[in-house]
Amino acid sequence: MKKYTISDRQGVILAIVFWVAAWNITAVVLDKPLYLPTLPATLKALGVLMTKADFWMSILFTFLRVISGLFISVVLGISFAYAASKCRIIFYIMSPFVSTMKSIPIISIIILALLWLGTGIVPIFICFLLCFPVVYTNVFEGISNVDYKLLEMAKVYDITRKSIFVDITLPSIKPYVYSAIMICVGLSWKSVVTAEVLSAHHYSLGYNVYKTKLYLETSELFALTLVVIAFSLTIEYFVRKGFEKKGKR
Image (tube, rainbow, N blue to C red; front, side, top):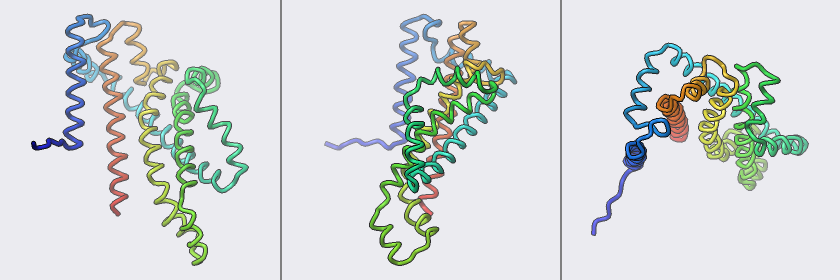
């Protein structure tokens, strides 16, 4: 009997079709748009949103906050992880902070941040606090797993520190950096939009989500959710392609 296999792309398409169909069938059977709108109703709401200039401004500002928070998290996460791997004092100083950020409720951080910072900065700050520990932990783990024998051999042959870092350390930690960034892309969108809901900054997707609650616009809520998912998946795609291109060089 011939075994049928599908490619990754076909698998992704199949999964999307399955869940979209399940969503729409459930919505039709339930027949309660306030609880669960159908796909056509959601797309109609999305079409209405796309005609509004405020919607596009909200996407732009939310996108900038996500990119800013993600960039700061990755740069500082890698820097502090490398420093902690070289200095035990830094490692012991960073450990309580990283452990606390992993376990503290996000709502507590947002409320405190609203007292400390301006509403426009809060989403970036929250994104950093959630993503930094992920990057730091992954990169530190990657550095810790660099082949010790290769490092010893490099010292024996008197290879420069720059060459050791570029040719040994970087290739070893690359999978860990990739994994951290892929996790943080989704985290960054969720954290930024959540913070925007509570900070109620006018130009933000979070504020638009908050308004759907006030006016019970469930179909618009689903439309905004699809927008966030689409942007998150798009960034993940470009990150993946970027790492694949570097891997081929």
